[in-house]
Image 1 (cartoon, rainbow over the protein chains, first blue to last red):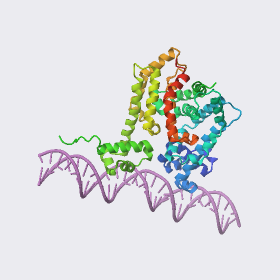
Image 2: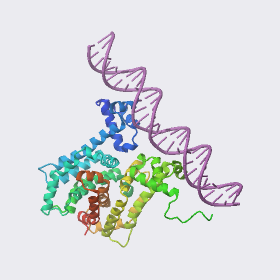
Image 3: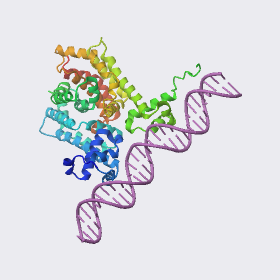
Image 4: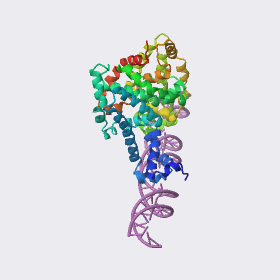
Length: 210
Length: 210
DNA sequence: AATAAAATTAAACAAATGATTAAAATATTT
DNA sequence: AAATATTTTAATCATTTGTTTAATTTTATT
């Protein structure tokens, strides 16, 4: 009966506390390695309350997964559909915004990618992601830049893979990269902050945006 | 002690069959989601034989994990320590070699990165990876290129993160990227083959190698 | 062929784990 | 205050899962 975050959790309902705990544990360990007892302990509630409020581990997971995926894609969509900003500015905003976001939520990228693979597409179809991107201002601007000869490689997926790869991979590969290089957590974060400015420059240079 | 080894090189011993099955299932589902019964079924053997030959799920996993990690790093090390090839050539060989490897072993990258995170460094210290890279010809050549002003960004970790990110991320993010773009498996592979040639060019452009 | 050793199998065990139940505590309504 | 509804708890259930055991079959040795 040890109460954990009394200040923080005093404001939350039991249902919300379970959800926050579930988000934390699922993000860190993934679905398969997470025990319902881990979530109950993290939330400081009786195990039975998890099923009382959410019926099952699966149902609770699906809520967390959809919210995580939606949050991740929505912030991308908001930037991508700004009519006023240039393609160049969008790249800057995506790099800066996602690096900040991942520093705050370091487990989200690997969690998302692992669980999407495990559910192999079943989850992807619950959100209208394809339309969201295929109708985006970002894509129109990319297409126009290609037509005007400002971008060398025509396929927009290369553009997106390069941008997301440069942003996300260092975080996903952090333990490996630290094992290779021996940089500290502090040094690593410093390098990531550098990349907020570097990545748009790099993308410019490699995709030949003029 | 004469007669046991009837040369049946096409066939595998029971022990080898279990290891191959374990590799397959662990790579696809990860440690936590893998059931020992999955491995036994995949290998077509009785469940008890798994413990007869390998003592426990953990021991078997550790063997697979170390072999996977070692194989992945060794192919990198071989290229990186070639005294004769230029930095440029090394980038080409790494991009081409790893893209081919991952096309053949599509589950290995996410498996490695997930399990390294789960074991948080415990596994990384079992292999002398740091020395392997820090003493590499690759790093010496990178340092020299920076001194001669041929590479703009001095930190070699940025170079490595960019190179690996451009190579590996598209595979790790494949389900997400396909969900976004709707490209088929065949189209996706075609794009990956393109990247074998593109990535060295991109790296040149972004890192300003001259 | 007889015997010993090794490999394989079916069955079962013990711990872990997701879920449920019935009672107790708390809050809300009458 | 009494009655009712809601929330929480302790205990337990049923299944899954890693592992072991004891018996059986196959292989190797004498």
